[in-house]
Image (cartoon, rainbow, N blue to C red; front, side):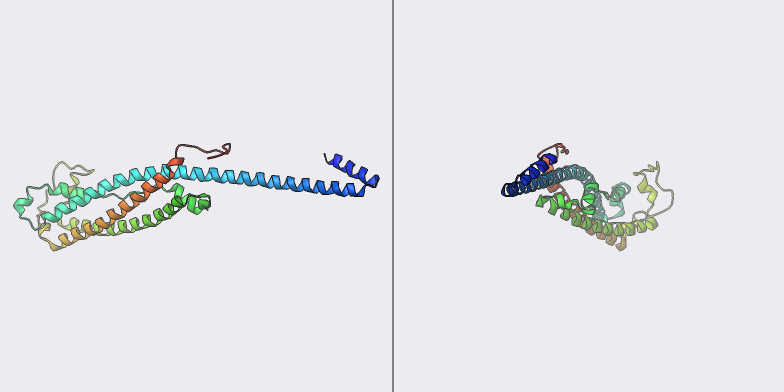
Length: 258
């Protein structure tokens, strides 16, 4: 093809047809420019198509990941709400007569109190989006904002968890000194068949202001922790809903459109 254009130019010059040569040269330039523009357009189209595929895959992965996180969080909330309910029962028992306390299974209630949840979320997709700069592929502003909300609220939950664990550790340290832990572990993994043989007045803690204050502090921190978890659950639901339209289609580089 190049040799053909070269021969045409030489023929026009040899015949002295300068004007025709100039017209031909101009036309040739136009063809080259058009070719370059077409190549750029095709390249841009391919880049846009790849970006669309990447965006779609991000939404699909987010949908899968946050469905897992919803299941994890719901299981954790059940544990935490059960633990808080046990704490409220204990709070109501503080100050009661020993004869009344003996009608309650205190060991089991204390075991349930320490059955606390502290879920670890799946964040492979979120971390990849943030750390590898893939946020630029997300055109859906709702999903983009929800990712920021998730990151921020997850930090709030982690701080609330730290506060709850701090108080629960203080309570556990108090229990070590005042209550037979073996009795509590009869309902846990150790499954002891008989209570402690040591001579300990396990009902004495229900007359102690320190025990009451520790339970009160634990419930206070639990309330904030569970509230944060429920806020996080709302964000999870919104991410799932926003990404659901993309959840069941696996885009590849051979696809033309979403």
